[in-house]
Length: 404
Image (cartoon, rainbow, N blue to C red):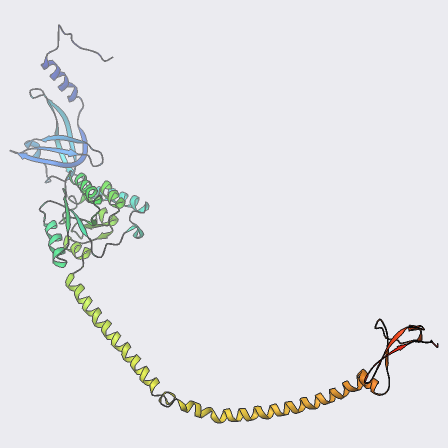
């Protein structure tokens, strides 16, 4: 348990507590801190401001008395990145704690650039700047989401120039701070709102230029990663040339100015009408040329003799056909003559070898009752009936005796 000082019957005074706190806080000493100036109010030479941490969500108030402010050699304003020598001070009478600044300097440009370069290399190694990750913008977006400062020139430039190019274009505007400590959270909120809108086809983040300090929010890691994770194409139109915030690297398209963004996200209706007219002329010319070529081809075909006098094709082949018919007749007669001669020769040979010729010469064929041919005297026995075939008929005979 922590130590308890005083009792309900003998309590310590408020003055004692205040002085104890002042003494304790006074022993903490001075410390150099770095942050972004998010508030800078000058009252009779005294400055009352706030410092915001560049990475964490933390803010402290500070006082810069006129005697100290008069000795500073640099000019400061809201949005500057500074290092400040502060010492905590407890005001006994008012019961407030404040940080009293005794010195303040701008963070060196070289250091800021070095930090951005380290972050740039890290994000590049992760592939967030790769060209293949960048999405194509729609030819004619249904609705354009616009993130910019309220009533800013950038907002007016984008809307005016886009409307001049395509009068029916629609915008969904989400206002955000474009510099200072509120820039990062408000831009992130606006991006999330437009990203969730299904009618928004492209998102433009626009600002009308600025110095290096003012452009620092657009190199914030949170914004860069949110743009990389967005499913809707994002256009960076910060309006600068000398500096390239990291938003330019990760965006799907970098426009040099808000006006340039308007020209690149919507087509020019006048130019498109000219292209349509040119396309119609080209199409009409090509169709006319095609039809003319086909007409010429038809006329060329119709002018051929075979189409003007079709019977000439038959006449040209009549003589050839007659010669072929005559030749076929001759070949057929020769073939028939050769075949007839061959048939007669074969007929003679057949007749010479025919059994009938043998019978005509006086021979006979003797068969048993079973049809077998009697070739030997032993093939028959006395009393057997025989069939005798001669040249012009058959005879039935009986065997009376067998002589071997």
